[in-house]
Length: 561
Image: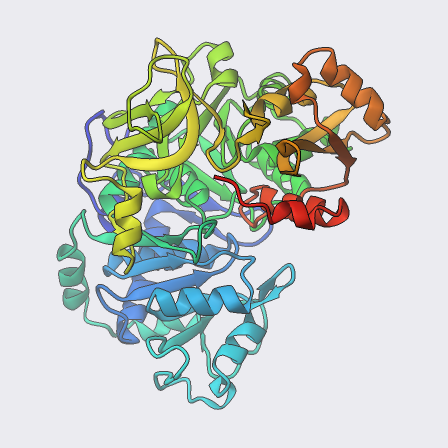
């Protein structure tokens, strides 16, 4: 094992990579199935150092912010480690961002350089960056950029697939040559000057309560969180993790990449989630672990070619990112051989893991709870109005404290004080219960709780039941405005292929098992949910659609306490 200790470790990401090269030089570090990119730990570390020296030769130094706007391509991994090797802070950019969001992030984060690919889905990064910097195409790429709109941004580095580098940009592959003549003694001095409590990464929250906030995470935060999470899955150098969750999110960066590397576990990345590519990677490489949000696993289980693939080597992984339906967890255990599947709960501000089930937990607990607190993490459930700590089985707000809590929001001191109280407790906004044995269950978000006629209703409880109906593939339950009751319940349902059921039939089944006030007033059948690039379902968009389609604009303007 790389670390045979359960204690917190003090190591930077750069030294972690050095240690991997020292102890497992010839072990597989990373392998892609759709391109010629395979590296051992020694090969990968040498390559990272070349890119790091290339960054230094461009004037990127310790403390600078480097943005990466790309899918799970090799350059993402290289940029991450090259940046943190020299003390630069990696700023992760959501792959679905458009011009408004990208401009805000690049300006607010004070990014000095951005590494980008061509595009992803309907976001064309090249077009966006040229609109943000109108004179970029006529810019001499040997000189730093001078943009009034983005005064801190000095370099655009192109990591896309085109043979010709877009005007004004530096080609990523040119960094190898740029760093060849950089003084190795200077490089090593920079590496030695770094501390484990230095900020290593800034991840931007979704901005549900205003503009996105840059969560500052340190080496100590992320390395230890990844190690604890890998420990819960019993990762070893014999494991192979298929990474199909996006690296720009903590799910990919911490729960996948860092959990793997702190255990010398090989990584098999998929550039962007696609069920067939995931199944191909798992089968061809004999992957032993697979992560995903519930919808990803549902899409694999329901794929028409699912039965043509073998998952004999799979044993563990993580389902997280959104509430995990019990039935989906049971199905991945039964049909994908993921008998040691785990669930992690947390949020970006906590690096992100706070609780996790383990491979040793009974199956019943692994499919119905989010586990107990990770080592060296404290948690409690409180009354959000009074701050009173609540007992077993009583729902309240989940709060956490420990090594994993962020350093703060970048340049947002007041928002930081609102999130972390004077005693160091992070207030997550999630509703949870805890049992007598310390196992937590997440029942929703404070803002997602449906209050109908004075009754507090958990969407997750209704979703869990609807998932058990044979014709249903996926479901999301939301609250929509009502003059009479304040809110009514609406369920968006995706049916399995070739299955049929009417709205009335579905309501009757629900009514036969749940209290009358929990039966959705509205049910709509749809083909897919609006999703973020990280695989999270955007419930607010479902609400917006419902208000418009049901003509509830007036009701939506009613102000409630």
